[in-house]
Image (cartoon, rainbow over all chains, first blue to last red; front, side, top):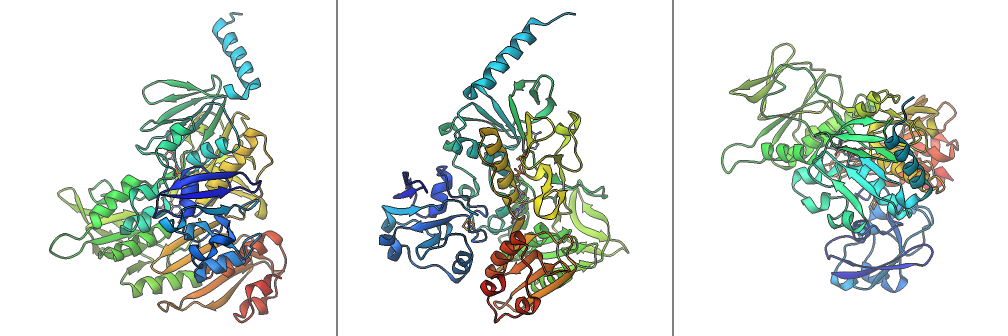
Length: 106
Length: 437
Ligand SMILES: Cc1cc2nc3c(=O)[nH]c(=O)nc-3n(C[C@H](O)[C@H](O)[C@H](O)COP(=O)(O)OP(=O)(O)OC[C@H]3O[C@@H](n4cnc5c(N)ncnc54)[C@H](O)[C@@H]3O)c2cc1C
Ligand code: FES
């Protein structure tokens, strides 16, 4: 288990205990955290699981694959700390990770 | 005139309930992707009244796409298939009634009648009954080993039929129908060490859904992975021995031997409940952009519906997870009085081997096909996109193979209706950012 703190666009924090091995996206979907749609169920095909990773955590979550990069390139509202949450696997090292969801997933 | 007191009372109660939203009872029929999603969106959007989710299958809502892909290959476990954890429904006060089939809809009494006779009343009804595999009247269709692929139970049967025995040769799968599900199943069968033969009556696979270049590409790629194709081939019968399928007899007499036969020839809408209750249906329940039927108390979402396609000024039906989710949002937003969600461009994805196919849009009204990149079936190097353009160079649809920028930019161009410069679009050295700018 690792605590992932999902913060919505309005600033509301939802701390959720997520099983290690799941992705940050799966943690949100399984607990009905609003703001992450995940249309493709984690196939890296839709970019509707877009999140902003807290800058302090950028190193720990690692870097995006080429496929993820090119999906992000065209997502709405991308920032340097944008990631697709279905591509971030939850590990013990990510206990306390903060991610913020964008205004809309589209 | 005899006035039934009970009816008057019921009507008064209903009135009262509707004025107090926490007393409005929402009944969802079909606990699949759309049904599960709309229940979750209703709660996310603040609906606090009772929700009953009724499904015929024995398990809570799950994702079907992996059934022909990761699940079939054994790369995903049962838990990862589930849309939500089992505890989700109780935690969100969603009464889940599984293994339960709705037999009839009574719009006058506002009830659905279950198999067994129990009637459940609703204030708002959401039909999310999906589609079922099309059955063809072939001799031998009822033999053991003749399978379809729509549910988790179907996928378990297929997987069992394909698993390699301890000793002896691997199994052989014959697929009737060269659509996406058939091709994905063939690819997964190869990954499981089984042989695969795809039998298609058209001269190419994906004939109804993809352009010729893409069909050829997929055929070549599958052949490189050992899949055998029988194209332009009619099927006369499925042959059996002792009640077990042993092969597919083609028109002309040739027998394609097989241990299992997967019939993947499309799907038909489960729209009978609505049709029998007098709602307009045409291989799908007719709805508007709020997913509402002509009866304001009844919505229909996902595969079972027939809907307006705003970007294409048509109505049609879409069979995809993104569509199920979009319509789930439309209905949940309409019921809770939220602003409607933005119109999505229809889209779809498929995985076969190391290929990621992403399709956006529909090729309606397209007069030209433009290919960006080389559609050669070279292992590890395939990367191209097929654009469908109107006469005035607007993008109607894009089919992208391992080409995420083309897919994403294509989706934006379909929405923006901005004309593109074909020379730039064709030129891989010009980035999609620049093409779309
Ligand atoms: C093998 C396979 C692979 C796929 N791959 C992809 C893909 O890669 N990408 C993609 O976007 N889409 C894919 N799809 C399509 C996608 O799964 C569907 O579009 C989606 O499931 C539609 O959701 P739905 O809720 O409308 O229907 P379904 O998920 O089919 O759910 C309908 C449910 O209603 C139940 N039901 C029906 N009638 C009744 C009744 N009278 N009473 C009670 N319950 C009833 C059914 O048992 C079923 O559980 C795939 C589908 C299959 C089968
Ligand atoms: S869930 Fe679709 S890209 Fe992450």
